[in-house]
Image (cartoon, rainbow, N blue to C red):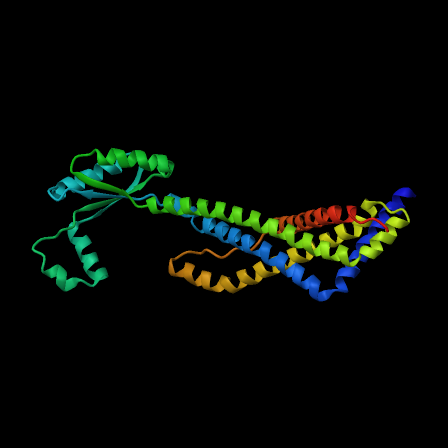
Length: 306
């Protein structure tokens, strides 16, 4: 019976705190709106980074090497080197681009056809495009293959075409840390906003708290409704934050699909997973509860019946 009464009192306080914040719609909307914006910004940035990592996941396999031959190397030597590379276990394919083919492609793509006609000879070398085998399609494997090819005769330069992918992932790692720091700062902002809202609510109900303490209520009993109010603020702000992110994903989904199709990709912008949404709601409730606990504990302790 005591347990039932305990839960009944908590349920009554929970519903009562909801009724109080509903009776102040403007102030409640402002508080929940601030919480929602503070949560939605890092959440959307994190979702953006997650989609970026998904979109670039298959790029790690595209470790093609461009092997630029010495201008003095003959066509026979180029063909011989291509055959030699195809026999390696760590090479899946070798494609030969002659200097004439490279110049013709550059002429078509650059629009400098007349300027190229003025050249006395072709400045471009023969090129081999080497695709590593699947077991060697790792940063370490391609680095080893690059070193082995660079040491071969008549090879002038070996360029790893995927180095920009590594730079991209390095930048994404930096952005991930920036998002984490931003989330921490905005999380602290949620605590402060809820704490200030609860502080004002306590000041407005000071007389009521004095009466409660006068009849023997403890600080914990007087603090309880404010803690539940903080939970409602966090839950409402978290739901609005999820709604804002869902709207942003819906607005960007079609343009992102169009951009992906231009690059021949089947990538689609992914929204929030259920587990992520649940974690966001839990985090919002915890932050808001903590802010309300800090404010209620400090200010209720200082109120004494006169």
